[in-house]
Length: 600
Image (cartoon, rainbow, N blue to C red; front, top):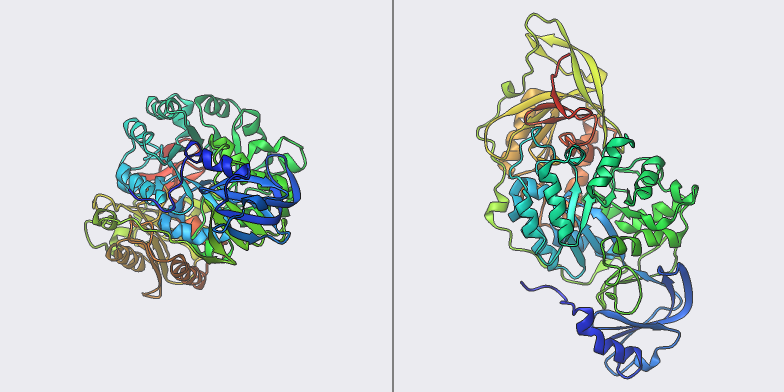
């Protein structure tokens, strides 16, 4: 497979790097007169030159004019800061609604030059073959996109049904692929805690390959269950939401990954472990986890996370370490990336200010890939086959009766369990509500902010629909909103106040081949087609972001006031994060990891 800007290994490049560093040969690129932001020593050194050869840093010194030859490209830094390209330690490309190529095109101008990605969304839909497609397109890009082999499809066996299952054999095979850097987040934390043989076999296959095991401990219990999870082998965790979570993780030898995504705001409550408690910052990493296309286009990527960490009180150099060298070290790649130092990949940002970090020039592997917000590099596309584009199988046309919720016989009202959305956080609340019964059917109640939720099976065409109730979106009037992005099983989730529109919305998503659709008063008012696995578009990020912004506006037009409500919608089937979720098998109590009844 051809890759963009093929990079020689350090040993292959060493003769040339040595010749350039010693002044015996000209460099490919010299950046002159900048401030060297050294994340190895946490200092800024003014008046420095940087020489690059074979896509790697050859030398950094006060005067490298000897490395300038007739064919050397020279960039005048003019006192600007020269800092390493930014690194995202944990993320899901699919959450951007974009393919790896278009995601790279969106984030490169923001200074992101390395991503550690877990494509477990597509693994749930297409299995190992889907992971391979993501991996192959990732390797085609002009920046570094490393893939973690998904660990949990299904995320909670026995509580959901996925399109495909991931096995220890799949994990062992993937560990031989060139771009695989480790195991994706181990979401089945109860499985690890109880020494499930399948989970431990996946961890063992990863550790036997000398690679990193990603963690996901979504429980507030920092006692024996957490200790058992840490003993099982996960090396990091991004599910912390408070200072105690971060401290517990680093004290137990894990990296605390603090995320700022489109809907997750978990940095401020955890970074105090460093800024106030004074813990060694080497154990802390910044990441995004989930960012949709609108955030990428309008707000940024890792530069946004970095600025947020600084605004939360972090020293800029410490915050920079958390999104460069700390991450590289964690994945065993400190000698390859994450700093401006000899031999490392020549990934560099030029910026006039270290606190606000305006990204003026982005260099990846020794080439200018973006300048002043404009992408200058090609991000090649994989040839996605029909099998990846035809993944929504409903089995039948759905009707309003599929969304009816029968009450117990003779009941005039019911006490129903309700999924309570929590703004800007992944967990939900397990609520109860008294709901009216009309003609034997339990009714949603917009006056109590209670809408109906349905999970529609879409992998095998069974025609199955599981119904329940959800609160927190603020929907009013006659509406429905549906999506085939439904972490992690990625069935179809439809939320609404009107059964006829819920059916129309679901049928529309089947017709589209996947995506998002919003309906109001009998008509579709916004849509985002996501034809690849029902998760992603291969259209440019700006186009997808524009469609997504219209979708967000349509949700608001239906009464929704939540920040990044779409992200909340997409997590309503995530049966590994407490307290209550919905799956194709029923309502799930995630505090006990058991199916539970809709009515008390």
